[in-house]
Amino acid sequence: MKKELRGRAWIFGDNVDTDCITPGKYENLPLPTLCQHCLEPLDAAFAREVAGGDVIIAGENFGCGSAREIAPRALKELKVGVVVAKSFARTFFRNAIAIGLPLLVSRDAAEKCRPKDVVTFDICSARITNMTANTVLSAEPIPRELYLVLSSGGLFPSLKKKRAKLQGTVGRKGGI
Amino acid sequence: MNITEKILARAAGKKRVEPGEIVQARVDRALFHEKAGPGFFENFESLNTPIWDKDKVVVVADHAIPPSNVYSANCILETRAFVRKHDLKNFFMGKGICHQLMAEEGFVKPGLVIVGADSHTVTQGAFGAFATAVGSTEMAWILAKGSLWFRVPEAYHILVDGRLKEMVFGKDIILRVFGMLGMDGATYRTLEFAGSAINELSIDGRMAICNMVVDAGAKNGIIEPDAKTHEFLESLGVAGGEAFRSDTGAHYAKTFCLDASRLEPQVACPDSMDNVKNVREVENVKIDQAFIGTCTGGRLEDLRYAAMFFRKQPVHPDVMLVVTPASNRIYKQAITEGLIKTFIDAGAMVTNPNCGACGGGGMGVLGENEVCISTASRNTKGRMGHVSAQIYLGSAATVAASAVAGQVADPREIL
Image 1 (cartoon, one colour):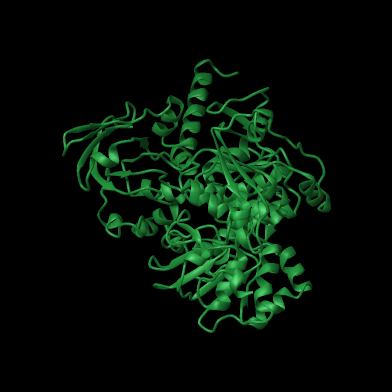
Image 2 (cartoon, rainbow over the protein chains, first blue to last red):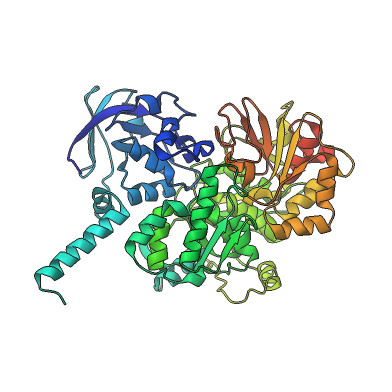
């Protein structure tokens, strides 16, 4: 995971639900096409204009509703750099870690950022800066265990990494 | 400890657990459906490992069945192939909605840890089980390992005492609780329901309550098992389980009290589940569609109360009524009792059991500016179709009354 990244801010309110992130009526579309409707009910321009590394900044309970994993997957597919929210719904939080979509909890980011502000962020140290407004935002560090999963790209890539490491060790010792 | 803490302690092999603590808990039941499975089959196969305990895995095709498009058809095909390959016996196709089948088919017992790749897995808390949701990737993990990490949740105690009025149900209780807590009011927490009104509720009413806790952000909802729970499970031939009770002096982060005797029929107005009002305060809202179904409000008790409204009066000519029983067992009993004939004679469309119109996937998708009243659990923007459509949520009685009146209506004024 690259240390410091930079992107534009997309601001959303409280209770952004997974039905808004990936509306059920588009579930039959392949992921890249489904992504064109990402967050459509709240901001029709988002999917069209979002660029790699951009940052979603939201209020309480981001990702509430259905446990569908396609919601964080769509944001990852759109190359969203990080989702910053006051709080996350628990299934969205778990799913994001499991598939390797970075997220950070910040109590003040939603108040201190405006749409299209340029934001830099570092997931490892949980540092977020609003470059446009020249303000440092507060953020809670991600527990180390979860950071390791995230930085490997998710639960399965991290497991494969662990296995490869284990096999490497065994190999050097000449096998069991 | 409270019930949830006791179950997690048992599943983690510990004497006690504290809120905030992370535990590795053994999973007793793993549930997934045809829309969640295909998201993890590849990951699971890449592990090249057998399923940890095939008897504990329940697979259901329920979301869009019979399929209404090629994507949905492929989801079912992929799921069937996975089921065949791994020789999974507990597979149900088109027999009902997974959360209803979990109970009806005897997979639920008090004290179990039940994890499903669907948010409404929480329904099984109605039987004193710890039931919660995960996504597809973590479901693959469970299938391989049979365990998962959980953060022991803080608990809110929801005490509902007093006698419910006529035409007021479990659904009205949970909607009122939403009004009190808000859509994020219970995030990460367990909601433990107790009190005389909860004891008096039917199993169907209790399931409706626990079903919706996730929509206030809760990790799980739970009700202490009692004679009614055991009687229900015995009728299905289910024995065993461990009926945990909260200790006197168990810790709750907050306690909320609700006087059931003062509760009126409730309705959640667009576009959020916590925008809750007394039905009689919502005046002159004409509806285009009414929907009775889902894992929240498509059970036998719902159909019985709904049918009462259609015995003498038809569905309003401006309204399209869709009735979707939650399972075939319910469907057949409703046929035996003459409820289905009542619905059809009144002008309703009755569909086979499936998730139906609830998620906008089919069997009742809403068009532009269409107004719907539904027994489902969610009314957020675009949930059932077009972004401009508006969804009201109420009990089956309230939805049936509204279907007769052609507008959102208090069931006590229609019957």
